[in-house]
Length: 300
Image 1 (cartoon, rainbow, N blue to C red):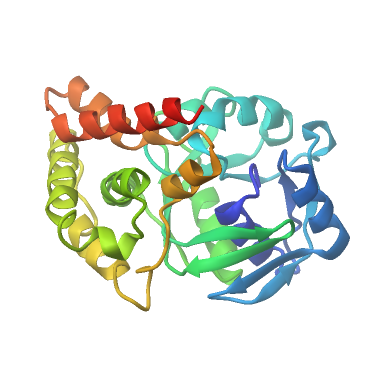
Image 2 (cartoon, rainbow, N blue to C red):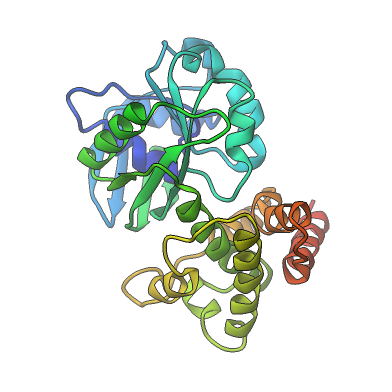
């Protein structure tokens, strides 16, 4: 695991349940790493388990690995891959990060790259302990410019599924990735700016804005010839159910509240950038990107 925060911990602890998988985690949070090594990686909430994971803050301690799963914040992808590339050079590396553009950065360091997107979400309770907020599926497939062999994609999907994280191996994962990107662009940016949980964003007065933001994302996906695997609007309403993620704080809101840099450039900013490449304007996504960057600056 490259990055063992909320989402990374869900995968790491799940995979660590398997007798045929040895899990290492690279993370710069010294307290989190120390707690994992002392008592295991605890998950509670939507699932309860403890994974015996070998965690380190030093990339040079990592052994050669067959697979890498990248779960750092998108703005840290390039640095994290530069640090861990020696351990992953002969393996296949999969992104389960938010947004678009991470695979391109990963491909700058390793050959076999897997495109991925995941729905499960969580939050850090304390060092060594992550709360599992939302269950869901993960979709992965070869990253077209630098693809991992399909056999490796299938092997990783099988391991994750056996570890309790249902994962689907696809020949083309772009539709799944862009469905999640479009969903996230509305939920995360609006949540970061308003302080609302996902369920409240899906209600008036922000509901119409969320749908308009997603419509721009759809237009950009269409311009690239990407067929979404399902409706992001339907996913938005599904996640807004009381029993799913009504009270979940979008990760960008969590970042804003913690005073951290957000992933806005890889979400709404990515929709703007890909739109410009394909002649599609996305003014609402551009405005949200500017507003979140302004919020970051005001709290710097």
